[in-house]
Amino acid sequence: MYHSHIGFQAVTAAGPLIVDDAGPIPYEYDEERTIALGDVYEKTDAVIEEGLTGNPFQWSGEPRNLLVNGKGHLEGNPTSGDCELAHIVVEPDKVYRLRFIGATALSFVSLAFEGHEQMILIEADGDYTQPVNISHLQIGSGQRFSVLLETKPRSEVLSQSRFVMQLETRDRPKLIRSYAVLEYQYAASKRDPQPVSASHIAPGSQSPQSPVLTLPPTTLGWLDRQLLSLTPDPSFPLSTDVTRRVIIRTHQIIGSGSVTWAQDKLPWAESFPTEPYLVSLYRDDGVEFPSLERALAHEGIDPVTRAFPAALGEVIEIVIQNTGSDVGSVDVHPFHAHGAHFYDLGSGNGTYDAEANEALIAGLSLAKRDTTMLYKYTEHTTPGVDMGWRAWRLRVTEPGVWM
Image 1 (tube, rainbow, N blue to C red):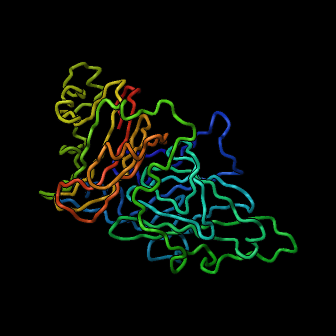
Image 2: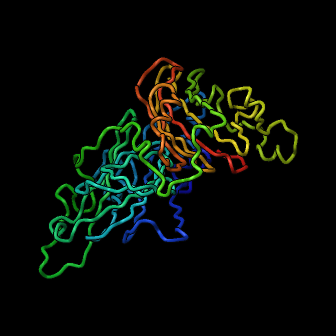
Image 3: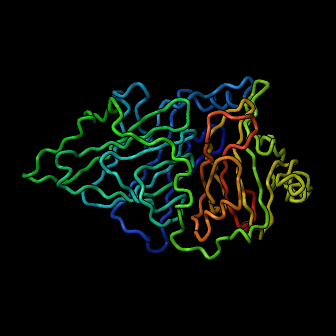
């Protein structure tokens, strides 16, 4: 996917960016469909940004709805005639690759298809994985998954040609539910009865009046240590290869009228650095360019530039540690990396235990990822206490400044 990092533009300036394989595709399917998920707000981007960064802090409010390929009804108005549901058109007796893109700005989403209890996950964040059978998809902002969906035989869709895809937000104060339509189309013969939509899908693609599916609550550690590389990776770094571990504690600072997110007690804002890192490197002034020496003296973070430097050739383990906010609240976060993909080592409650987790991943060829979820395991805890972690392993081979 492509997406903006300017202000709050991620809610509107995002979309699919599909790169075709140069060689043969390792999985067989007939056709593919792209399903981009988004959320929509009542306020404009500028108003939301001003409120979130301002003092006093003003919350954006929860999204009005989840969108599928830009379509969906406003919450509370399921019969809105000018807001049609998205239709995912398929034919019977085929296998489709569904490319899901989590292009939401805030929403963590769970979804499934009515009448289609099994999907096969084959790709995560741009890399093929070994096949995993799933009944529902759990997707956060920035994540991408491909699943194979086998459509029903023609005989089964003569009496019902439309099925619901139901989406729901997770781990927010308010649950938002939305829908799209999986629509079967085929050349009818004179012997076929007239196909009808399901009784809960009214003409004109209106949303059902009540939920069609019962989606599970958040599955903590969903597919952790289950997503394996399609081809075993001989370069997968073992624990004995790790040269350094960087623990990044993410914390919400609440006070003096503002709300700020900090990593290792240092919030990152557009005022840091005062000069772009690469410009400092070109000028060779050494002031604003991240210093590994300073970082090693401060548990991995350079306090001058508020960056996490690494040396080429290192194998670093990055542990993102969730903590209770200044008022003890806990949130769920998608952590999304730009640059080289990392090996995701899984997640868990409390404080990261490297030895215990290594026993869980021993012998596995873990898939490379670029976006994984930091879950919350409670609604409220002691401010600053460790409450959940996510671990990555990265062989540093690419020079540059990565976010």
